[in-house]
Length: 175
Image (tube, rainbow, N blue to C red):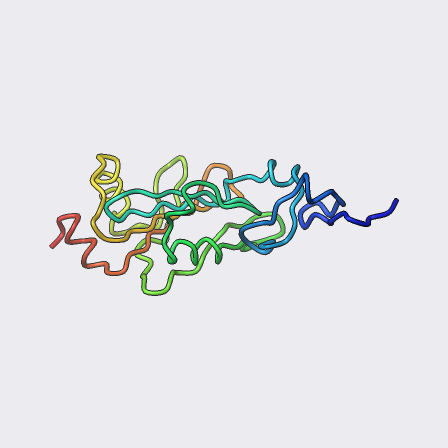
């Protein structure tokens, strides 16, 4: 079989007709590489969900090859975070996704949650932030919340990034 005019999918490595059946990956290690229709449509947008609050709410989800959601309205900080997310192995079959803190931001929460609650948030920022956000009270400054998949189907990582922690605490009524 001749592969002339066909492209090799970066995901499954099958050859396919790119002109009628393909896309370029828009994130991760596959960025700008050809992806076949099957891989594109089967991409799991569950690697991470990133929500940015800044007087409004913008949400994107990440797959291996795709960014889904309101990608036209995300900030450069969210784009940088999304592009930095990678798998970290803890042993042969377990691990978690993590990303780099966006430039100009600080990570104020590096936690995870499971069926028995939130772990690693000693200041209780998540509960207080969630109370305001679920009521539709969005901060008038950038807050980025990232929910990241782990190998345990009953837990997810949870990171919160802000430019100024004191500003967040004041907005939540701490100062």
